[in-house]
Structures are given as C-alpha cells and as structure tokens.
Length: 430
Image 1 (cartoon, helix red, strand yellow):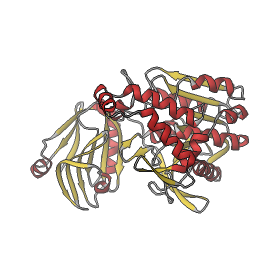
Image 2 (cartoon, rainbow, N blue to C red):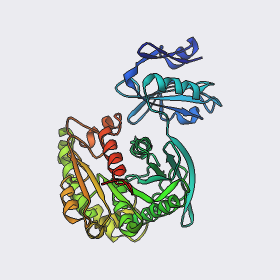
Image 3 (cartoon, one colour):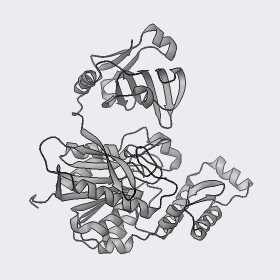
C-alpha cells in the first residue's frame, strides 16, 4: 500500500511491489520546494481523469499509474471509498500526486505544515437560482467572524467550471484568486457556467446576455448570505468574465464597492476578434503557414465568413466551418461595446492586462483609463504576463498555452488584486 512520508527536504511516495508493477514506476521523490498545494479528495478514483499512460485501472475500483490530460501529468494510487491526498507540484516531473490514504486529512495537514503552506481555505459548495435554472457554486470564506467583504468571480469564455477549468485546459484562475482573497480576509463566490459541472442548462445555447444574467443572480445570492457584508461587495472577472463584470458593474454599481477586470477588453467584440486573429496568425509555426499557403487558405477570409454567418443567424446554435458553435453568444459578443458602460461607471476599477496577451489588446488599458467615469481607476500592464495570467519569458501566443497551464496563476497578479480590494474596503482610512 502506497505511503507518503516527509524525509528531510523530500516528499517520498513509497509504492508496494504490486503498485510498482501496476504503475510501471518506482518510488517517487519530490523536493519540498516543488509542493505548491495540498488538498483532500473524497473520490480519488473519479477525480483521476485523462488517459492512462501507463497504468492499471479497474473501473470504479482502482487506478494506479500515470494519468495524462492536457497540461497535467498525475501519478495516481486511488482506491474506491478511500479518501486521497492531492499534492500539486511545480517544476517537477509530475504536476500532481493523487494517493489514497485512510487518514487523508491528517496526512494532508502534516504535508502542508512540512511544506510551509498556509492553512486550507474554508469552502462551501452551494446552489443558487438564475431564472428557471439551478447553478452550482462555491463560497470561500476567510478565517474569523463575519460579516466579510466578498468578490463574485466570473470565469473566461468557453465551458468553464467554477475554478476556470476546461476539461482540456485546467486554468484554475478563479480558484487561485478565491484562495488568495480568503487569505487576505476577503470572501468570494465562484460558480459553474450553464451546462458545466453542477449547473443546469445548455452551454451551447447560452448567450452572453444569459451569462450576464447568471452573474447578477450570483451577486443577489451572495448579498443574501449572513456571512457577507453587503456594503463591501466587489465583482471580478477574467477574459469574458471581465466583459460580464463590466456589464454587471454598469447595472449594479449602486451596490458595488469596486470592479476588477483581468485581461478585459475595451474595444467591441468584433474589433477584439479581428485583433486576436492578427496576433494568432503571426504566432503560427512556419510549417503550418506553408501548408495553409499551399492549400490557399486565408485565415482572415475564414474569420470574415464566420463573423458574417454569426451575424446572419437567428438560432442559438449553428454550424460554422463544420462545427457546432454557440451562435447566440457570438452574435451578442460581436455586438458588445464596453465603452458606453465604462463611461457610466463611477465605482473604483482595477484593470490588469499582460504585455504578452494575444487575445486582448494591452493598449485597451489606455482606453479604460481614458473612458471610465470614476475618479479611482487603476490600470496595470504587467511585463511578460499572458492572457492566461501566467508569466512567459518567450512569446505568449497560443502555441505556448499547453506549457503555460503547467505554471500557477501569477502570484503578483493575485497579490495585486487582493491588496487593491482590501485597500478599498468601506471604513478603511484612505
């Protein structure tokens, strides 16, 4: 039976002979500096996702070996009905260790203390209503008595869960931000998009306006919690979430203490899509550009055709270039113009974009600063930061995303947001 022990400066995963054979791997040693996060997982067999590469799986009962998913490589020793410890690693051969242990909470605590990590954040999984749908979310609370200030966190585009994880791209931005805020004394609420995770609905049929309605419903739910200070409610969004936060801020600003816009746009949706295409075309590897030339494929013409199809459509879902797409969302996003909403905002705003963002123009920060109607507007263009809120020494284009997601959300971004919010809590001296 696998055991995890701390020996000097190493975390050692010792495997039984049978586990070594099943997983085609020997004992694993990780330096203390590689341990980034420790958590307890109730159902490790279900939590181990991806392709077995290599290892042994008895469906619903046992998983032993290496499991790979985009951007993540996990060594798993999971047994049915036995909780597990998940150790998140950085700069190591594996991104995670997921190991069942009868005393998982106690073991997780000992590893956390040994690694010098902060105490886990108290979280409550909840549901709330948005129209006729029930959506799932997580309320994260800081230590100590309330009522607490709170940030409602909106994720980026695509079928993302409450943590900002896509099944093919685990970003974890919303989870990382929630935990950073909790350690700074700020509660948070994050939730699954429609049709994702524990939320009802159909992701493909949802429009941008539906996502805005869901965010407003989440905001209303949070304000009704006794643990929350209704005078200290912030809204924070990343990528599409920043678009949603802008719209929510304009509609709800009388009850908001501030907005945080991470990788947010100040152009129209159509202008942003066309800007993206120019950046992405330049990032394509030379062999791909040669192939496209031989096939006489014009990427900009293809985009023109797609945008025209979205504008002409009237249904929620259409096929564009042979693939089902969320047409209503695209129609509404293409038409969305944040400028008049920004001009009407009077609440404090923090806007952060990376200098290496290829999905949102970093120059939009200047537009935010010039357009926003309030007196307290902070814009930060962070060197080497990409759209995924990771640092990248080289180009930050799409071709590097798979590599980027193996890094944590940039700590400087998390600290910046937490400090900005705490500095603007009601009653705090200016």
